[in-house]
Image 1 (cartoon, rainbow, N blue to C red):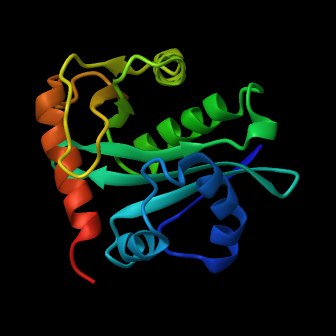
Image 2 (cartoon, rainbow, N blue to C red):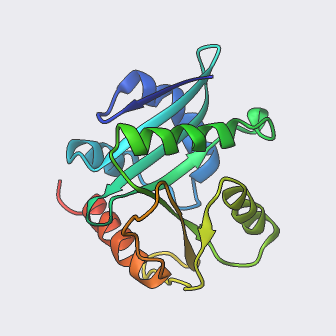
Amino acid sequence: MEFKTIDYFDEAIWGKVFPIYEEAFLGKGAKPEKIIRNMFRKKLCFLHVGFLDNQAAAMAISGKLARISALLIDYLAVPEEYQNQGIGKNMVTYIKEWAAQEGQCENLVIEVESDQTTENLARIRFWEKCGFIITDYIHHYIWVPEPYRAMFIKLGPGTALPESGEEIFKYIGAFHKKSFTGS
């Protein structure tokens, strides 16, 4: 599997990953393309792509939470035909390595839906298998109906990441606010 990370909006690469993004997130919290373009313009995010035989087999959008030296994995998806083959886990491993080296981050953070559905519990198990720790705090956004919990992984000893979900969500919320504001 080959991986690539970019910090600019590339039409050709977006064309390859958009179907994956759309399949996984349309109607389930997907940011409109206009907002994603704005995030790249403002240098808020990165696009990570995993390729198998020149086909996009995994994608992720992440953003830096600089004040806590963390990379937020905002979206991660693997097309259905590539699921259950270790591709998602390989993508997370790549992002961990990239974040520690190129992204200069000491931590990874994600937010997961906290409702106790079979699908949500499977996602949480996936992230736990990747080494993430779930926090107890349940966050309620005013603009989306489902509640969320933060998960994190420290990429090295002695990192300054707060382990309180409530505290982590302050940084996640600030990232989302920056993503949606300004043009």
